[in-house]
Image (cartoon, rainbow, N blue to C red; front, side, top):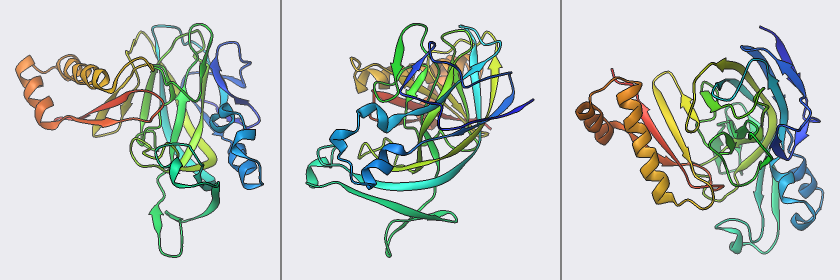
Length: 292
C-alpha cells in the first residue's frame, strides 16, 4: 500500500480517458485529493456569474489511473475522511428553484468551527462533509462533471458520499481514471436549491479493484446498510428511475442477500427506503438496511 497526494492544480472539467493521469496507483493505495473552490473565490472577488463558465463551478481533481482495472471490474472507493478548507453560502440570481427570489449575487464565506458551520449569529448547522462529484472515465469521449450524471458516476450530489462510506463504480476503460471534487460542508438530501454549502478541502480515500464485478450503477456501502443508486440520463424520468431502483433493490435482496422472492418482497416493502439524488439527472437511491 502506498500513499499519494493529488493537488488541486490537476483539475479537470470532464471525465475523460484522454486526460493525462495525475498519478498511477495500485489497488488498495490511499489517495488524498485536494479540491478547488476557485469559481466561488472568483465570485467573492467581484466577478459576475456570467463571466465564469458553467464547467468551472464543478471542476474535479485527477484523474487517477488504477493499475489492473478493466471494463467489467469495479473500483471500490473507501472514503476515509474529508477535511474542509473553506465553505461558502452562495445564492445566484436565476439559478435553481429559489434563484428568482434574489436579484443580486449573495456570496459569503462561512466560518467552520469544530463540528458546526456558522451561518449567522442565530443559525448554525452541523458540519457534514460530503463529495458531490465522483466518477470514472467513459469508454469513449468525455463526460460532463456538471450534468447529466451517469451510471459510472459524475455529479451525483449524494449525502451518502461521506466519511465511512465505500462507493463502488463500474469501470468503463482500462485504468478507471478516477476523479472527484465539488465538496460540500453540508447539503440537504437531493440538493433542493441546486447549490449547497460549497467547499474546498481534501478527500482521503482508499481505492481498490474488485475484479469481475460488473455493476448497473453506483453502490454505496456502510456497515449497516447498502444503497443502490439508479442514474438515468436527461431523457429518463424520475418515475422511471423509481421503477428501476425498486427492481434493483429486489434483485439485490434475492441475489446478494439470498432471500426467497417472498422474503425479498416483504422485506423491500417494509424496510427499503427510496430517496432522491442530486438535480443533475433523475437519480433514485434504494437503501437496504442489513437484515439482522
